[in-house]
Each structure stands twice: as C-alpha cells, then as structure tokens.
Image 1 (cartoon, protein in one colour):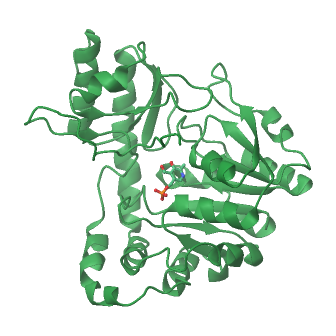
Image 2 (cartoon, rainbow, N blue to C red; image 1 turned 60 degrees about the vertical axis):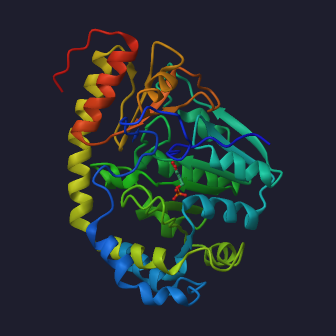
Length: 360
Ligand SMILES: Cc1ncc(COP(=O)(O)O)c(C=O)c1O
C-alpha cells in the first residue's frame, strides 16, 4: 500500500538534537491558533461528552445554516472535510471523474478506492497553474463527478466566482456533480469575489466543501461540512458511513467558532501582512514564488531536497513532489507569525548557503 503523504506530521521521531524545537510549516493552519472561545466551549461542555453525539448533528447544522442564511437540510457534517469527501464518494459511487492536477490528493484517493476512473486535466506551470477554458471542456456528459479546489491546494491559485460559475454551468450541462472545495476561501481578503456560495441555490448539482480545520486551527478536533441544495444528496451522505462521525466536543467547538467573526477578520489581516513579507523573503532567497492569496505560499526551490535539509534544522515544510505534475523542487509553506517566518527564511539561507541578509 502506498504511504499517504500529508502535512502536519509532527509525531515522527526525527532524531533532532535536544534543544531544537520543531516548527511546522507543512500544515496550513491559522497562525493565531485556536480562538479562546473555542477552547472555552471545549472545556465548558465536558459533562455532555459521556453521551453519544447526535448522529444528525442538528444543533451544529442549525448554527452553520444560520451562519450562511441557508436551510440546515443543506448542511452535512463530518469528521473533517476529508471525511465528507470519502463519504460523498462512497454514497455517490461515481464511475468517471475529472480532476485538475496538481490538487489536493484526497480526492483521487477516495475516488480510486471506489474504483472510479480519473481523467486528469493537467495545469501548466508556464501558465502559473491557472486553469483555462480547456479545463471546462475536459468535463463531458460521461463525467459523473468533478472536484475543484478554490483556492487550490497546493498552488494557491484562486479563481474568481465568475469563472467558477461557468464551471458550474458546464457541470449542469453535462449532468456532472461538481464538488467545490472552499476550505481555504475564508482566508481571502476579497472572499466574496471567489466564493460560489451565492449561486448554490441555483445549482443543486454543486456541493461546497468547508472545514473548521484551517481557519480555527481545529485540525486535531476534526470537523468539516458540505453545503448543497440537493437534499437527497446531503441526506445520502449523512446516511453513509458510521453514524457518529462528528463527536460532541467537535460539535461544541464548531458552534463556538461560528461566532468568532472578529477573529476571522483579524486573521485575514494578519495573514495578508505576514504573507507579503514571507513571499518577499522567499523571492529574495532565489525561490520562484507563485501568487498567493490564502494562508500558504507555493514556490519552486533551486534544489530538490530543500524540505529534507530544513528538517534537519527542525523546520517542516511540505514537499510537493508527490503531486501529479510537480517534482521535488516544488514546496508549500504555511504563513505563520513573524518570528517563525523569520526562522524559516534564516533556515533556507543557512541550508542553501545564500546571501540573504534579512530585513523582513
Ligand atoms: C483543500 C483541502 N480540502 C480539505 C482538506 C481536509 O481538511 P480536514 O482536515 O478538515 O479533513 C484539506 C486538508 O489539508 C485541504 O487542504
């Protein structure tokens, strides 16, 4: 069996000398950490954890529905967005799929496990991995399902909602279920210009995928959800898999997180400032840095083993060599706080023997 590669592996013993503290840039989590209100909700509700959770997640779905002004029947929750992807595929049983490449690997893993044939629409490095008209044309009446990640992981490319709407129209024409992964859209400063949320009611063949994981730094809690106007589909996903995929602690955290609007606004500003400095620092060190709008930066290093070299300094970054269409020179780093970002830049300078003198 092929080993799954994801960011966030802070658990493997790397034999680092004592005194070196690991800093993780490989998982794209909010650098401000989990909001205090979420931690409080986790502790406050401890007595509720002895009972089984609500398999229908009614309270949480009501809160999510109210947050977006959508009926709670359009909401289906899961043990992280990854769980929703797997349960959707298990329920829908697609035979043919279209995926852009490179993109988040979990789509292909879930589809392959269901025996689905995947047609890849390869994005070109020369065009900055921006999908063109040909992406929509790869979707045909034979395509049962298409996953599209906006902004894309790992490239960071964010397509405007006008383009996304034409993708939704193409999928409606061809009878293809479109799964739009917007797990990082809430980090965008002009989120409204990218999200397909306003179109959801018009397109019952589109599913929007979201997670609490990134924005609220709740990766270890595991909570994600999908929004879709096709209630047969949301109910189908709800009925697929084990009954209690969302724990009561996760549910309590999610409800508390949705009230943290100010935290989200602060995060966007903080991330934008740090991202600009980080991008400039990476470019000054000779990296080919791609445009970034979310809480991570995608770049190409002049050497193939930058992640391994940095790991020896206790700095984890995501090598993108296992993505279709990329090689070991491509890397992705999360945007973190000023001090940690400076440590990353200093680490790169050290391992490449470059001449970067700081200043960001
Ligand atoms: C684009 C994208 N979608 C979904 C997920 C899965 O999120 P979760 O941790 O909530 O399962 C990830 C995780 O890295 C991701 O990058």
